[in-house]
Length: 150
Image (cartoon, rainbow, N blue to C red; front, side, top):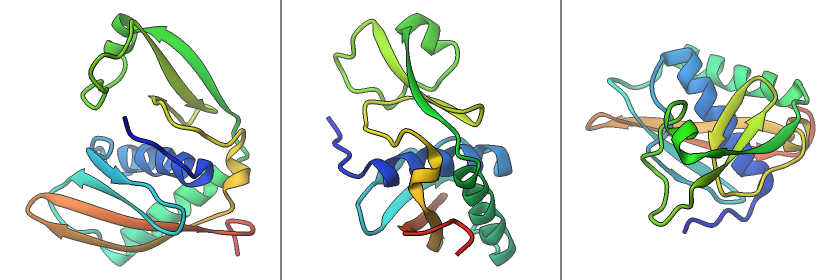
C-alpha cells in the first residue's frame, strides 16, 4: 500500500490532478511519487506543455490553494464509487466501502492518504519542470511556505 508522509504535498497532488482534468481534459495521473521536497505526477498526454500552459496550470492550482477549500472525507460503497470514479489504481483487497476525499467543490477522489484540513494550509505551489516522452507528460512540483502569491 502506498504511504504518503506529507499531508500538504499529497493534498496538492489532488489539486494538480483536478486542474489537469479541467484544463486539458486528460485523466488523473496514472503514476505519482509524492515526497516532502519535490513530487511528480505522470499523465497520459499527446505533447509537452507550453510555457504559457505551465504558468496557467500553476496559477489555477494556487487559486484553489488560496480559496481555502475544506478537505473532508466521505465513505461510499464500491458500487457507487465505480459509477463516479476511476477505480483502476485501487489496491487489491479493498473493502466494500471506499473513503473519498472531497476538496470543497473542486475535487473528489477515492484515497487512502492523509490530507490537510483546508487547502490554505498548503502554502504556495510551484511547477519545477515538466517533460514529455513516449506519450507521458511528467509534471514535477514543490511547495513553499507562505501565500500562493509569494
